Image (tube, rainbow, N blue to C red):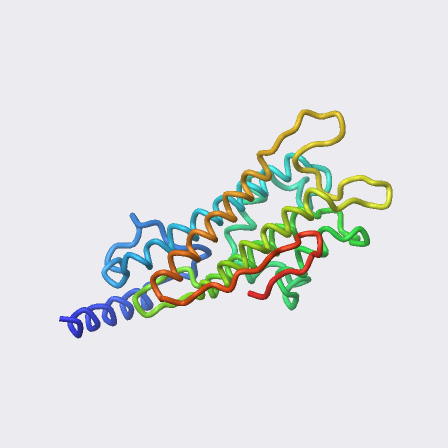
Length: 235
């Protein structure tokens, strides 16, 4: 019976490949139609986790723009929600030629570099994180029986999110002003919703890394992370 399943899988993949449009994130299960025949339970779990982490990243970008509205690159053209929707409507590797040849974590780094000359720091911060997260899925947006992803990349992406969260909360200019406002300023009531969002993204990636590791039998090489060292792990 295994060969019958393989034949069905290959036929489904051929059908999907012929009909598919370029996607920016895994399809919703309700839109999967015949392609679901070519997906295992682990494939569907991967897609659920990918949709969740990208959805939370999009929510984080909206929150950061509301907190940092003045530097937004297109503030005179569209609303914050429309601005963010436009960013996430593009594939993660398209739309920003100034960062095209940079590593995702280097894009995150320049967003929180006090020498960065751009007015919009939220954009490179999110663009870099999105590219990094998609790289942890090997830039796939559909997952089938023959699709594999690396649990180590997922684990490393979670640690990189921890570093990015530390940078967001701590990086300041020479006058001691936070480069990107998030949780709070001095004398403001503490608002931890930003860190909670990032924490949920970290948990999503860690959870999927454990699922894939258990499924494949490949161990994850864990590290003791010092976020203040600002050393991102490879993806």
